[in-house]
Image 1 (cartoon, rainbow, N blue to C red):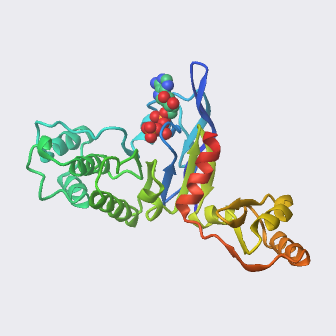
Image 2: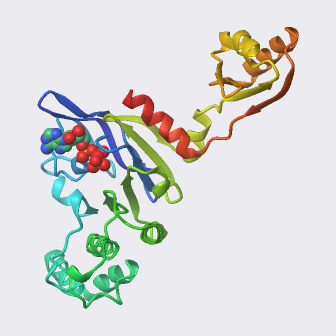
Image 3: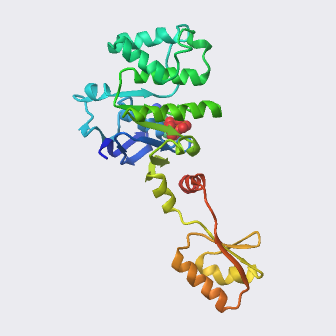
Length: 300
Ligand SMILES: Nc1ncnc2c1ncn2[C@@H]1O[C@H](COP(=O)(O)OP(=O)(O)OP(=O)(O)O)[C@@H](O)[C@H]1O
């Protein structure tokens, strides 16, 4: 898949503080890219740099292979729809009136506006003032506004923030519908679960740096689950397994980061020493655990 967004060494410093640090992003065309990281990791700043709302301190942004600079910015931005921070839209106007403003600004036809409203499932609420909308409806109006110009790329910053589980689910389905039409969507969140079932590719940011970029399967493969050894002699077993980094955990010997060969060696050693083993297993880990480990390491 060719990349729709690439960045090379993208960096932002505020005063002496580096908040985005040498980012090499690669967002394949036609995918949902889940941009993850704890609060303050630098997601919004990165997205603002992609949209030319914040000027990078160094590094470059390329959209569809073209470098973003003063001469290309206008053309490239016309292919991007975005929803950054709070949802747009005037509260005293109806959804339809807000959409008409976008229509005039971007010189769109009625069909384009109607399609965007339908995709965002707002047709039943479109004649109500936006101030009477729920947060989920406001977010969906923001997406309809961003979508109306039929951009190739949508950049959504925390669109599920503050939504209830039903709203989050609706947002996931909306994002999926968009990629069905060929739109590439980059969506940020501080919660893995929000994007896990939607994203084809994950980028995990921590402290301004890319901690991981790839598919869910690749993320899983990076993490070796802990080996747990059940024995009637946990203290002795833990001491013998100390060389492998074992710790005693509620009567079980826990050995992190152990590959298959090393696990075989450890078991052989324990048996050789006459330790009574009655179980050796690997701890099942959720993607959430893997994500938390990655971002926790960064926070330390
Ligand atoms: N204009 C600014 N001046 C100084 N520091 C800033 C500015 N904008 C952002 N920062 C700092 O940059 C860091 C990254 O912020 P950013 O909003 O990009 O993170 P984020 O990952 O989007 O977090 P959140 O999920 O909380 O929005 C934070 O420490 C923030 O305080």
